[in-house]
Image (cartoon, rainbow, N blue to C red; front, top):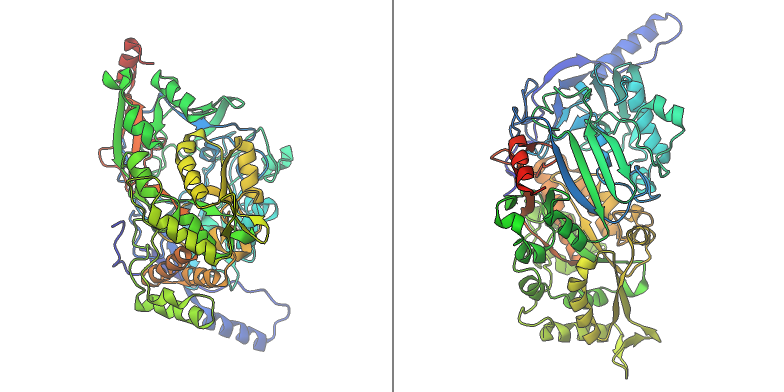
Length: 638
């Protein structure tokens, strides 16, 4: 279990005051007008909560006077370097645009008004603010900003910077973001240098509004005006932020070095005690994972999160491991399992037939792959909220039926969704790469859909060959994709793997120039408006998340139910129904996940004995053991 189901949807612990909404002064002094104004004040008076944070469900984990987060070492020493690797190339420091390929870890240079923690799945806390104020209706929120926040060049942050940044994203942000949040905020008011008010539209989902407004990344207004920079353009200069780290140096496509800002305004903030411990964070770039692994073995970089089961199972027998210089370990991961999968491009007519999609799904033999290729290290992805309370299981509950029945009555969903268990990925026999039973089932489905086998063994329909190209950029995936392609060929599909460079891969995913591509659909414990970017019809034409170009009115309606849910119970029920419908649609071929972090690192890093459930945190709350690092250098490990 990832969290308790019995938390009540009560207001957070906070102080409350009585206030009236703002109203406009009037000309004249008629007693009648004055009386009417006071009557309106009395009728619309609301209780306003003033708090150090916000949660929709239960109570905030941390009080206003917290000294530090529970999972950090408050006495962790500062210093040293941690280094990691990245694959491919980069030509920009702007990850808010579709132009160019952004460098790794650029987000560490920026901060937002509210932050979350790695052990409170529902709470958000004041960070750039001291307190926030909101009425019961959540029609607006006021952030009382700290007066000591500065950008990395020393210029102060004010409410003007917050308002500017919000408007900048609404004007220049990527289309999928603007399409989802347009109409969300009716007004942003700078009340004074350190007070800013967001007023929300009547239709804005109330469960999302405060965390949405508080999640605004803050850039410097004066810096943008001085430089003429735009967030919809590639740039070789990072934007000015307030973060604990700044860019120190870089060599394009080779190396990045971020350094901890010695004058960071928030160094002593309770949220930062025991965090941001490394002096420098270095990223080394490699063309492929094989070259990167060889570099790790000789100490060219020092921390590696291993995502190859083959490497994890067979390759960590090099001298640095054998003599104790490198630590290889598995650490618990309590996050929702990522919905990693191959996804179809539904804009192609041949993938719009669910029988065809199911036939293609049947030919991926996970069980054989896991036993033969993955050394049994993975479990199958079944859900978009894998391994959490939001995962649909079994047959629908009464609450789910109440949401699904109207969609069945309108012909938007098949009636089987009301009685069948939640759809699971096809199972295969692990003895051989091709499961003959699944091959027969898939062949029957394609026959039924009108795709017949010709003299050359290739299936065609109306003169069109059933072809499928799986787009990839990493050679590490070849050993996984090629057996899948062989199975598809046995079915009569003209299947192939097309491997391109990183820039082409990113561009073709964005533009929909593919049949099938890898995708990782990460979801949170409190799904809301962000679901539209992943699965809603409104984002299908232009989205970095809705890559499958899903347009389905039933899915859209169920997303609305999740967004509009006001209690934890209702949100969970609506998420179950949505998960059930997404899985029944079959636009994906689920891949695999694991509930541990598989990491290897040179034995000069330390972490708290008990890690939080929702983060590994190697760049956040791990620290550098200078004495052990010196021992490793003297031994020739680095």
